[in-house]
Length: 433
Image (cartoon, rainbow, N blue to C red; front, side, top):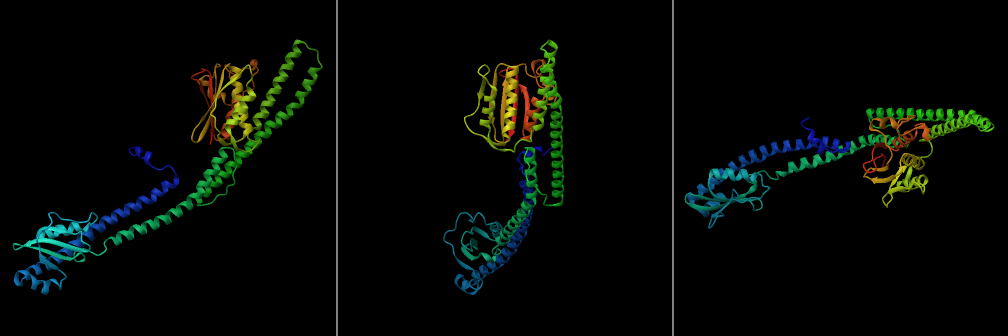
């Protein structure tokens, strides 16, 4: 709970999350080892070497006090690689390079041992010490290697380069392990949109188990869809034969009130059978292909509107290519527009383009559907008295169910709400891009 805010800054993808799991321990290890190395090497070793050099400097200063500067330089300074000279003017402050970590220890130790005026560590590989000894100002210069380890950065560079190399190898193995998961995700997403992609389980044992489970699930769903299609098609086909005989028999009977009612009932039965067949055909007509949704919506609206019932269009003047089943999308939009024209007088069709989805919105000024009945309205064979009435020539309650089924086959959804402008029903057909 207390780390919930951290989720907003964490990567979303599995690859980068796994990479972060690899990088965090590596960075923590590098920091810990670097701190320990700096503490023990840059401070301890530098302090010991500086103290040794301090003894040498004190010896040279003692020789200068006893024998003079020129003799001391010849007898002690040159053999010990120390140059001592009179200091005319010394800098006012100590100087060192910004990245010189060991220079801090050198300056502190030298200032504790001598009356130091300034220390210059900016000269390449040399230390220049300005000090006062027994009332005299001296300039003492000696090699930097005598007070700090040579090339102290080598271990750090070696650690970083080795860590980066091992991280690259880890990334390569990680990418190879995540590739089967990404293939499984693509196959699942494609199947959710009504497409069947070739997929064979691979990778680790757990990923193979998930892949086999997905294949079993996909096969079961395909069998169920096939069985549903065959069942509805078979029932509807078998009902057509007795229905045709009834129509022929009624056509030969005199036109009285009872016969007209029977003919109306037979027509309603034929509409039911056509609706059953239409519902059974969904998902089995064509394969998804990249199609311009704008043109599909315009064609569907053109088929539904008439001069007496025009449809207002708010459609962008552009093209949006989405992998869809053109016939199914046309039927879905046509059903929604026809419902709007049937139960209202004003219908408006809008298309809203988002980054990963396209929303086809159909609004009308009809009675709408109460919020409590909207979930039931999209179920098959459901008729709502307020909006679907057989006396109005309605269907068997498959219109919205067909649209919902089409939306799900394309990885989208159908949502019903109240139109804020027109006051009737607002249907949003969402298609994933």
